[in-house]
Length: 113
View 1 (spheres, rainbow, N blue to C red):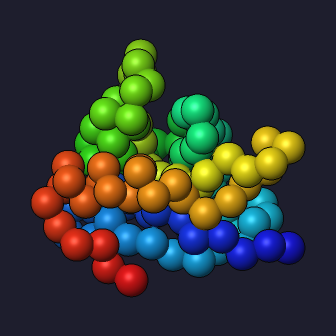
View 2 (cartoon, one colour; view 1 turned 45 degrees about the vertical axis):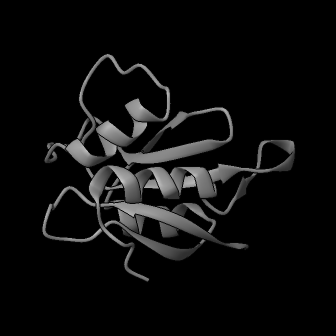
View 3 (cartoon, one colour; view 1 turned 180 degrees about the horizontal axis):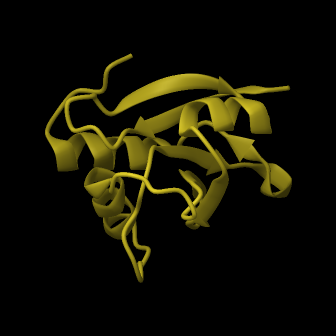
């Protein structure tokens, strides 16, 4: 099990966008994302999302971040979003710095540690 720093974007606008160390395994993702997990991939990152089969709140901040990072979306994003980097051999690594800077710029807030 390897620990990586994930960029976490909650559905609740009162909760700050923040970096959080997580252990890379299915159980850890389900604890944070509260259910089944799907993902969307960018060039050097992935975002893990709650499964769309659950009835979840929309996540406009994650949706904006994904779109601004260059991914066209057909629908809306729901549930907590965990952004991680794509490492060697398509594995996971820390969230890319450019994605973190983009989140800070878009949401005009410092990231909570």
